[in-house]
Each structure stands twice: as structure tokens, then as C-alpha cells.
Image 1: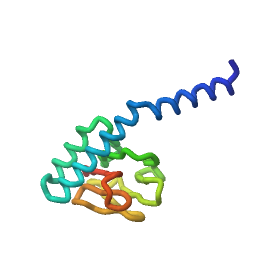
Image 2: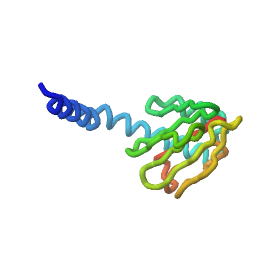
Image 3: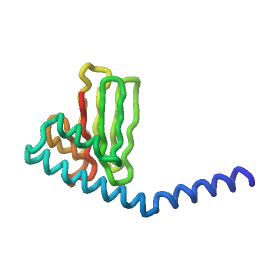
Length: 141
């Protein structure tokens, strides 16, 4: 099997995994957890520390630890990217021109810029895009 056939086979395997029932179940669970946490944060039912702990409980969350920044991203949607545009900065984007820029070198780290439509739900919780509870970023600085 040549490299092109191997690549095609790998791509088909990845597509199959993304379309699997388990992937859909994880996305549904992430959306449910995100919506629940957004409601709790909005109503003041949880504080900053509690929201970080609760976000980390969800098995579908993405945790990022870089320098002084500790983030949890709850996102059942596609297109979330976390990049490092320079040595001490993290950028989280949702693929629809919404995002956060974080100075991870500062102690404590902090959000430098909110791009597009970002709702700050509490001191440490941000909803990327319209306030829909789909792409939630919870920070611990």
C-alpha cells in the first residue's frame, strides 16, 4: 500500500470516528454540561472556583495549562482552536471570529482582549459567540 492509499485510509477512519455514536454522545453531554454551568454562573449559583471545578468534571472538556494560565473549554461544537501566536500568549477562537487572547506570562495570567461577540458571564467564565452556552471558556488565573 503506497502512502496515498494509507493517507486515504487514515482519513476515512478519522471521518468514521467523528461520525460515530460515541462522538455524538460526547458532544450532547458537553452541550448539556455547558448549558447547565452557564445557567448556574448566570444566576450566581456557583462562584469562580466552583465553576472551574465543575467545568473540569466533564469528561468532554479540554484542559489547557500553559505558563500561568489554566483553562477549561467546554465546547460541543466544531472549530474551537487554541493557538500560541507568540511565546507567552494563548488565543482561543471559535471559528466564527469570536475569541479570547490571554497573557499567560503574567502572574496571574489575564484576558488581554475579547474578540467579536464574547460574553463574560462571571470573573472567570466566558461564552464565545452569542450567549448560547455552546463555547464556554472557564479560566483559573
